[in-house]
Image (cartoon, rainbow, N blue to C red; front, top):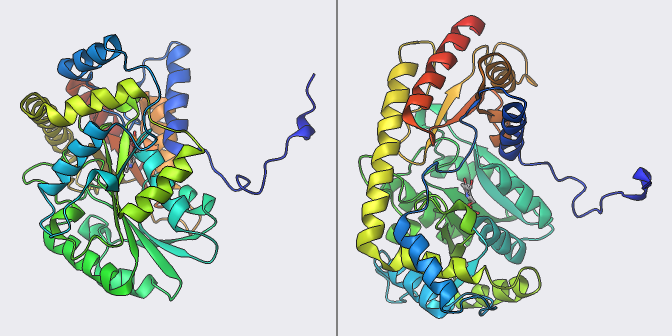
Length: 403
Ligand SMILES: Cc1ncc(COP(=O)(O)O)c(C=O)c1O
């Protein structure tokens, strides 16, 4: 028998909350295990299998002995491939070099490396909201203060220079950017992004640009900070292979930053996880260097995401009371829950709607409280189109019941 009172969490993690998106997936899985047919639109994970050419490259790498430790910051050819891709965008004289790239176990780890290495007690970090669940927790783990900056739903929740200026204080040290955005699917135009990066440059803020959904954009390509930033001095570009190449389980992400910050993050990573899995690094190298195959795979997946988005929106728009954003990237729909704004502050219309949908209509979605907007819900369309359509019909019916 263990003594339950023996464990009390340290001050490091006392405030930590479980990831709400993972919690929803687990509840959906538990209901499924109990025999219920659940349509899971909660997950932030492409439903596609990793493209075959990447799996073949990984198998070959294992056969060739890629089973040992590598350099902490990753194998040189992968860092070179990441730098080469960055240099196709970055037009400054200070070309990106492999020494500025740190490969990690997923962009989540890269974001954490950057937060932990850059921010500390007394620092404030601006977080455009709604925001991906983990930013607030990562900033808090670094003992810095996250300052949510609420966007305007009429602009897809994108924040403006004026909004950031009014949230800033002399203690502001950093800014989290995420375009295309999880959860809204909004994409900053090159002009919007340039204006924000110019403000950050003038104020001396560090910018962590999380570009994990960069290649999943509809209509026109999404801009990277590397396309428009006035300087790379305090810019940390974060990306990975998880979403664009359907490689979530391989766990490969990276940062591109100044060599000094890269060295500090490498030192930190050397004491936490060391190198990312060797075989996964070789798989990521194939994804980045076999460009013809990769472009064909990404184009095909993005076209399928777009078809699902369009089909889902067409069904949602049959109910004019549903306020749904018009997403230009990623694979999420963000919509206002029925009853939103009706009760005083503290209401959780998104949570009530998500619970109702899961328990009564067998559809899993994520309450917007997870992202700082309790009146909204996030629907992922990373599932087969027929399932997405069926789920949207049930969602509309549930909305009408509750509205
Ligand atoms: C905005 C955002 N950033 C980072 C991540 C983490 O991705 P990775 O699998 O590369 O750690 C996710 C995954 O859900 C995400 O949505």
